[in-house]
Length: 410
Image 1: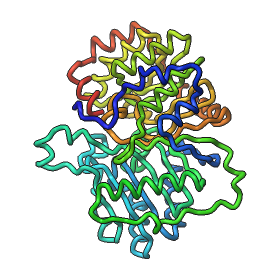
Image 2 (image 1 turned 45 degrees about the vertical axis):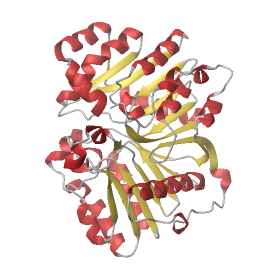
Image 3 (image 1 turned 90 degrees about the vertical axis):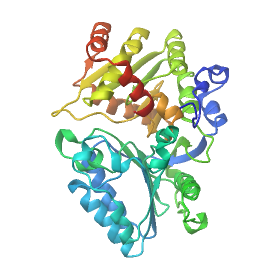
Image 4 (image 1 turned 90 degrees about the horizontal axis):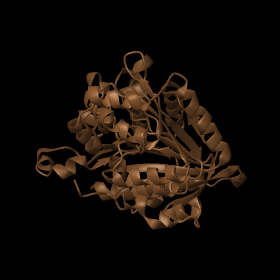
């Protein structure tokens, strides 16, 4: 388990604590790819995003690149997958990477899912990242090496990132079974080029079927003045030295007023906790909006840990999930009302060290304000976690063993 993609050392590195350096300087020095971006289409409703996704696939003329952590079919996703299959039969080039855990999904998806290997029969180029097998089970460290990214590129024009998987609870369920999450669609030549560059590189790292970058065109923008946002891309994947630790460290260690977060499974190691403590000591207000997951081991694992955050002074608003309440799966961080992080990473040790992630930091007060308003809308039915509740929650439901399982596997 000590074999890792990156470490969490940046959280306590003096470079990231240097007040003479701006957030932007720290992000660029950490290897971020600086991009000019258009204002994105923002989706916080999976039903609406699924319809827009269908439109993009129907309108595709050349190629689609897809990467998802969990990919499976169900009644609610059948139209989406059948459309992808039909477009592939018509000659559209479709390349899809899904994590090797897709067929072993442990969420409610497992009750209704159908594997999507049938897409290969239609001409879709589909591969698994690190597929599970008996030989890999002999080396347990390989089992926790996962690709957690969610991204789409359509014709080198539209790019999409966020937290939604292509499975039942993310896109195919109805009512409370459908998670609350986010996806963002950009029409930006910079972003499209960057994601296509990296997708081709990653594909060639893990597939025997090689592809050539020049075969995937990127559009030329007629009106570059629409690119009004500055973004910093971190794509923590095979062959990349970018890391989520460096990105989060640059943001947290530079914060002066407020860190606002929607973190899923916030289970921090000692370096991450130290960065939080340093921020609080500087007078930074840290606020988290989280679900109390009803799944057994994750609920017990987070129950064991939340008391530590509340004791530090982190303000936590929580929501009990269940049959009538959708689970909040969105990942978001807003720092000082200016810098906004969106993408796939959870704020936990696993996303820093044990899985591949993609994230975008946007430098825009306007985008940050929109994100804060949307996040605060999630809070309306939530409850403030005081220390009494945190301690009671830990005593009644907390489990150190479940914490370890969630810490490494959540």
